Length: 308
Length: 308
Image (cartoon, rainbow over all chains, first blue to last red; front, top):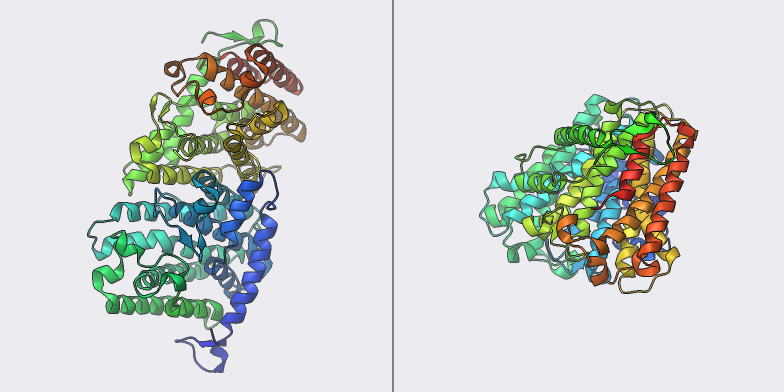
């Protein structure tokens, strides 16, 4: 990844070193996660090894990066945003572990490695997911109290974004939609929940950690919503256009599972245009930041153009 | 259940109508749970039906009762303790749903009804457990801020009691202990975590909701720890002495799964004596309340003498 110039920004000031940003932030987030979680040899070792196996399997740390970029855009300090950044990654990882289970997507392969249940067995994989979900709230409870956003409000934000009306609703609708012919509005319902809810929650929590204004929170919500939808459309596209090796997970599985996806419903070309339009809306949402949100902008562009 | 006279208390003042207490508190807790959870027809209906199926399957509401009794003992108001009461029941129910999965204890029968995965399928059962775990934190985030116990502290309490070093650690050690000859200290390690941690967390959260003193919290911790251990010893005893019909779940399954239990290691008679000794320690822990914790005392006695 080279230095990127974000569309919508102009001049040399818009050059943002996203590669450097992601490398540094990923290191910081990994160190924070390592510190927040019980050690791998904490008794019983099995569960802590299983939790860490998936948490440190080389995830791209997109959600933590969004938390930290949103916090920066609102003038917040990196340190204050770390609990939220670590918490959303724990939620994301738990959802992948459970999603990969035989009773769900039945996937053997994730981030280029055998899935959690393939290594530790199904029982431990269920518990490792449960433990990551639980520790996410323990970690976020260590976030700084903010005048506009007490920790209780931040906890509710995370619980709602990942609860039965959002993230889990998306998983359920996804399961139930398999083999059915869905229309675009139904597919959008799934994408809003399965992916957009936690991405949107991530930027909102980043803003909250910086005690952002109501206006900033609204802009972040608008941004996160559209980036989240674009992210999932791209995911659907990559599933049909890339190899398993490149993705680090089983490619083509949406087709096999007869899952409704944008490429399946509207075709590949139109899917690409939709992703671009959604990203443009995300850029537009950043207007109130008047160019002071370069990391968010670069992240949105990177997520649109990624090939894995 | 008739009016009980608790050992350690004396005179007519020790007559406590536990049956009435449990009936009233269960009604209140059920109404609170109903209000905190999304409606059964909230989209996607499957997940909310599945969550409510297990949550309203006729559980004894022991943990909420402990929360409310502890709050009362510390002079707190019922209303303030309801979020904690509802939250611990959601955690308990999620742990049962996941524990009953084929990959774990593989149980078809719970509280006299088919288990969650038998009715809704394994995928939805995993997600219904996840959703109950998540909503527990959303609910507890609505607890009152307390000077000595900010909501963040209460959230950490619940997360730690149900996390990978406590409740989940107990499940893991239980899974790993199957078919192995364990000694009493190892069995106690499992019981402390699998059962005592959340019962202890329940009375502590009840105390916190009443902004209890440090001394009261210490007494509640001591009480909850010993009641929790007694509870699990009794559970082990009932598993070998009662019928499935009576228990509403599969009896004798510990023997089939070759699980280490107190009856298996030290025999039935000694197990009964251990449960009595633990309950006596729980009674002793209530001393600082000087007879002002009748509900806690009656609950401990009831848990010792229960036959299902």
